[in-house]
Length: 313
Image 1 (cartoon, rainbow, N blue to C red):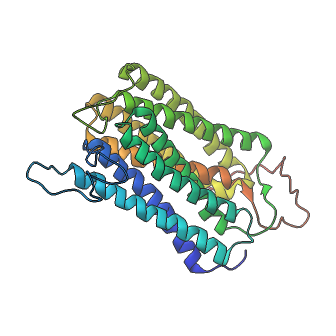
Image 2: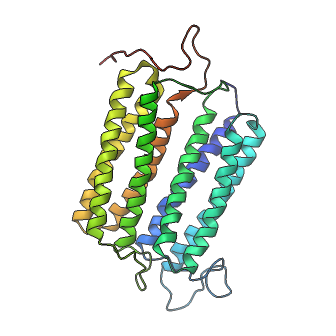
Image 3: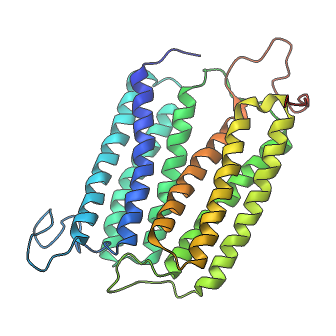
């Protein structure tokens, strides 16, 4: 594996951390009803870039403004990622493309954030805001993983059927996340307590659809856990899929608990953090089914028929 600067990895880790943190602070904005704490964009109130201090003000402008300031830091992190990859890994395919994509989507997030405020927190724009964040978390994870690999051509380490199952699991996760945003857009946490903007769907029905998708997702994850424990070529992804299963079970427990207890804010926030954690681990679980190290002498680089070995207990 090529030697790279430790600063490159530090910047990539910082970028991923910031992309996850903005999900958490965005959740805080929504759950505290602070989405319109700064009612204009890109300014906060009137002609002021910052919250205007007056007697009738609440904490909402500071929560929203804090999230905006963190989004600026996220932008700096994405820009630093492009600089670091150009400085230390510009010839390492496809790191440069991933870094530019992260920067482009981060800038798009800032624009969509402004549109969300100007549309008075319409649930479609809020939903798009969250889904782009999940895409950024996935891309930032892929970028960090790529730095830990060599420069050989990517080769699969498990049979095609297992790779297809892994990709299907990722697709179902996207559906789970999308349905989760629709559940949120139909429930009580609109982001603004005074003028809530809702989809108008029955929250109970949407919650059931979301739960059904989660059950399908967990079933696929269990299949991946079994497959990666049986296949000798899946050693790199085995632990990742174990983490996916543990986080999925925790997410299910949180989801049912918050449904039965009236969606308390702390549980909803934990659920959002869990969604980001699932995005990281599923992305890693899928990508580590390919390797960029040199194939063993005499080995089959296609690995369409790898050996099945029993793992030690």
